[in-house]
Length: 94
Image (cartoon, rainbow, N blue to C red; front, top):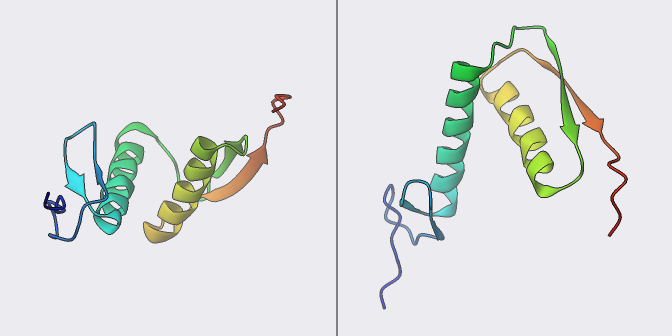
């Protein structure tokens, strides 16, 4: 079988997004994900330049990605936020 090609650039796709059905390579997926998060922040969240924002992190993959994407987008799109990583010990073992 032929490898699935990225819909955006024709490189080999690494995934097919359940949400949209798009076949994307790693680079195009990262671009799409970053754009969607930025659009959501601009549409749904009323951050103000100079504001301090705490990003709660449990150490799991979801909160780790959230902390990473907030730092990346804050720098890339000049939100002007003062980000602080807040570690939360949920008391869950294992």
